[in-house]
Each structure stands twice: as structure tokens, then as C-alpha cells.
Image 1 (cartoon, rainbow, N blue to C red):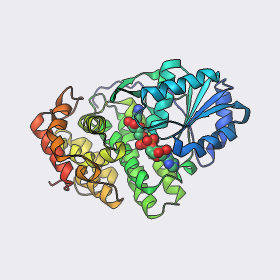
Image 2: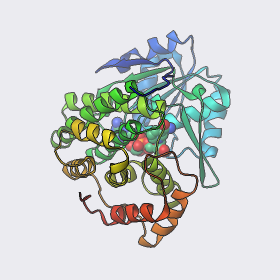
Image 3: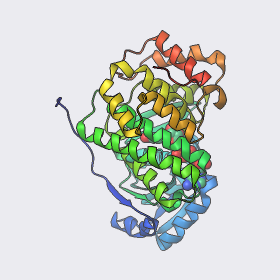
Length: 354
Ligand code: NAD
């Protein structure tokens, strides 16, 4: 057993079909009485459902969350929270809405109750992001961690398969990088392996049978584990590339994760053999971890090529340059030529070869 430090903050997680009905109790439990409810415009309905469950505990709805938390949106939400005299923030949605809650928390220390409806995992991490003048800056601060997370698989029923599949691959990516993180530990590795298992078995079922609530529940369970891993240990070349491509080329978040993951794993294959074995086992494949991840993406109809999600071929060199500046810690040294080759394979969408 190698040495490690385990330093996980406490988390209150309410999991299960129908748990959304416990929202008012959970807000009261925090000693709050005036909750501002956040959502995207597309999920106003979910926000109204939250407000209905909160009754007199609801102070108002801010349904303007958008991807990457523009600072103007965060300020407007913070202003509304102040005007409403809110003492708590209920974020109902995916990473964008929970990210907005975190931005309010960093400005005001309002406690968050998160009700995630995708598999992105942001609700379990102390990582927040804010986009100012087109540049997204991220930071880590435990003050932004939701005080309570309500995982109700019923809320993921409306998540279309075309969003659910890449969102699940995004969660798997958190698990994979946690397995080779230099600050990893055996507990996070257990979470990571179980997270991959849960997602790998449930995503194909969700795609085949979108109404299968057992599978959606299984995937949400995997997403919880994945978010915990992302929040608990470091990230490497995969997340660095995704942040670079998302930030500088405005590519869609979960889809970029889906496309890059098999190639980032292949890039690290010889430098992290134990992690690769665990990933392949958790996927239940005899092939390499990279091939198994690629095959899973194909099986669930998720994108496998950067060229199909808006990446210009003439941007690859610039992306490789950006990703090799200030790289995150990674098992294999991150150098320009290797990263460019990785990106070229991901752009073409070829299956990793042994
Ligand atoms: P998202 O929150 O942007 O949601 C995508 C779209 O799906 C939105 O229109 C949303 O309203 C809709 N949607 C979400 N759940 C739905 C449901 N159940 N039914 C119908 N529609 C639904 O997507 P995401 O992938 O969850 O989040 C991406 C963002 O989160 C990125 O900005 C990313 O950087 C951030 N993120 C942050 C962390 C972190 O730890 N800070 C972790 C993961 C992702």
C-alpha cells in the first residue's frame, strides 16, 4: 500500500426516487426560510416544481443560468438573492445551474441545496468557475460545496438520451483520472471503479430504454461517485485538454469529454498500468481501457470525433500549445508532439489501437 492523505469534507446526500419531495425539510434543516431557486431557462418547469415543494420557503426563481457562468449572470443572480433577502440557494439542474449557485456562494456565502439533473458531478466538488470577458477562470474553495445534495432519478427522466450519454461519459472521465491522480487514495479509487461500473452498465440501457428508471438511478449513483472523485483528487491531461478545447474553441462540455477520453487514456496507457487494468475491469472488457471507452461511446451513440463537434482542423496545433502550457500533473510527461498526436486522433475519431 502506498502512502496517502485522505481529506474528504462531509457530505449530506439524499438519494432515491421521490427524494425531491424532501426539499422543504432539507432547507428547513439548514435553518433557512427564504430560498432563491436557480435553473436554466429550459428547466424553469423544474424550478417551479421546486418552488411549489418549498411553499412559503421559496423567495423567488432565477431561471437564467447558462453554460460557463458568465460573471454578468452571477452578479444578476446575486443581486436578486440580495433583493429577495434570500438565506439559501436551491440549484435545480446540471453543472451550469449548480455552477451559478457556487458563484453566488463565493460572493455571499449563501448555503446551497443542489438537486442535480445531469451526471456532470459538479454538486460534489469545491471547484467553481466564472467567465469574465470570454475567459473562464476556475478555483477551489470548500465554501461552494453544497450543504445538501438531493439525487432524485425521476428528475433525470426528461434528460434526452443525446445529453444523457455524453454527460455519463463526462462522469466516467472524472473516475478515470482519479485512478491515476498523484494525490489519489484507495477510497477514491474504490469510488472511481464503482462509478465506472455503474455508468458503463446503465448508459447503454438508458439509450435502449429511455424510460428505464432503474438505469437512470444507477447512472445517477455513478455520477455521485464520479463527482466525489473529481472533488477529492487531482485531474490530469484529459481534463486539461477538455478545459482548453471548451474554453478556447467553445466546444460543448460533455461531448468534448466523450471524444477526448479514449485518447487521453491511450496516451497514459504505459505510464499508469494499474489504473488501466481497473478501468478495463470496471468496463467489463478484455480490450484496452482506451478501446473499451471508445466502444462504449459508440454503443451509446455519443460523439467520437472532434471534427463532428465543431473543432476546426487548423486549431489543433494551437490547442496542443495551450494544453502543454501549465499542464496538470499527469502520469506521462505532457509534451507538445505527443499531445498533438492525441488531438489528431481525437479529431479524426479513430479507435485507439494497441
Ligand atoms: P448543463 O448544466 O449545461 O445542461 C445542459 C442542458 O441540459 C441545459 O439546457 C439544461 O437545462 C438541460 N438539462 C439538464 N438536466 C435536464 C433534465 N433532467 N431534463 C431536461 N433538460 C435538462 O450541462 P452539464 O453537462 O451538466 O454541465 C456543464 C457545465 O458544468 C460546464 O460549464 C462545466 O464546466 C460545468 N461542470 C463543473 C464541474 C465542477 O466541478 N465545477 C463539474 C462538471 C461540470
